[in-house]
Length: 466
Image (cartoon, rainbow, N blue to C red; front, side, top):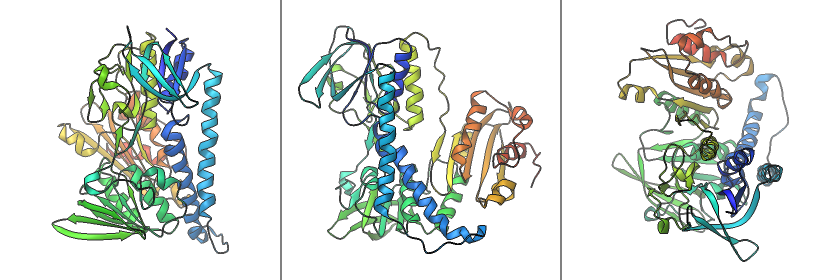
């Protein structure tokens, strides 16, 4: 065998898995057809946050007088905003390359395809530099990620000019004056917030009755109110019948509550979910089980084909970079014989909008659907000392406890930088904390995290500051 492990795809799942494999003494290679870091680093998580930061800073200039500060007229250079986001991605891409060298992982630039081998699949690589290379390994891991879902029947297909996916939305030649975002998940909402922050007129279309449908309903309701106060418009419960592009813009025909409406804008962003990259890998010839665009795996990432594993977005939801990394590490440790029985960890979700949204575990509705007896606590940032001092009083923290055991089973937050705070609840759930441990924990003052403590207290009628 040429290698102990070949990883196909160098996104946050693949490259992290390769590093862990190297640490465990496995001779490892990683194959990437585009850029190290994958979509997340180059066209997703990282560069979008750079764009959002520019939008946030620009928007804050309108509120400086509240802090006793005044400046001249504001303006922005859209080209430089985009350039900054690309530089951030490039810097981290180079960092992944350094990590591969440091850990003695062979990086192969090319496109991989699987063929039958004696004990595990062989990998045939069409090299970027030309030619072909056939590799053997004891184990092969698919970490090929996913791409934006399209709906050709309704015209929801990017054309690179007027109809965009996240990729085109991240690197346009100019900022549009008007925009329609189809889909109100995290990706759609983040782009809606960025473009609205720099003055674009934005309308978000959502097929379900409320925006951010995976979030707790209270958070979803508060988010819509906050976004509308910033000028975003919404059409919920609206199905898209057609999307058409012209030289000057787009028109979207929607239907909501039995009424038809046509929306027009310069550009549309299609953000209606993603589908796994399972094509052209030779999976059919090997008999790999695929369900609705994703490779079927067990709790360790193993497929139904001996020696073949899959992790991250290609293996199914939640489609999050940190989930992919976590799965990759566990899968490699399983291959090396060092992983215990896999207990699925709860995965926190974050939306980097303004205000931010973060959550983990069950929503209130999900807990009730399971028939659980629950205790629910809430605490608003409007009475938190640090929030008042900082001028960041929007939003709240909501906690959900199992009424019988006291276990924390869900936490939901909306407000300033709550994506930096959700890890506290993630740690609490992982450590199987109950209300007793959370009540006994000393939260530093003054911090916005005190709202987390107060929410836990409120669930048991012990809230102090409201």
